[in-house]
Image (tube, rainbow, N blue to C red; front, side, top):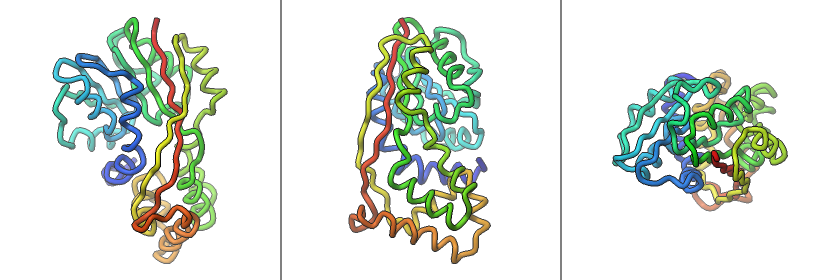
Length: 262
């Protein structure tokens, strides 16, 4: 992701789409003062910063992401009170940390992007000390908003652009998650559904701001002004039944997976 897209990601995606879910992931991880924590696929650090506040000055928090532009934005944001955060560029399939040195691993909407999910889970388990906790989330469906945007993109920019935009929702379902966790060596595995009402501001502007913060930004920039306007208006029409005066509010769901190391 380009540097400008990463900056926009923090302003749009982290704030409106992922930020509302961060507290529930922190709660699922049962973080306490002094914990040593890794936020894997941290993006611009919305979960990482809450974790640092939760574990306090005696804790340790690492935010790691494959994308250097995301880490650059995360580093530039004001540090929260609490643990000092170590920002790290790294690959979930070869995490550059020693065995059994963490109390918790968190990952918000990261698992679906890992090319080898069993290996990524093995890496997470390797890092956790005895009694360590894993908490991760993956989307349980395409969702109302993403479905509407994907439909508009397919019609206006093409199926390839739509598929790239929807990649974040190409997540493992319940059966696959259960198989992955069964094979990973974790214990006390629990899978639940978390639900929220998500509010987005005026969609005619928000859709284009959101797309500019994703890997499809170049494809959207290549469209003429009329086509870009049509993207926003198409999504507005598709979601008009969720209108709430200054935008839309719609129900959203995600899987929450928690587990422990014996």
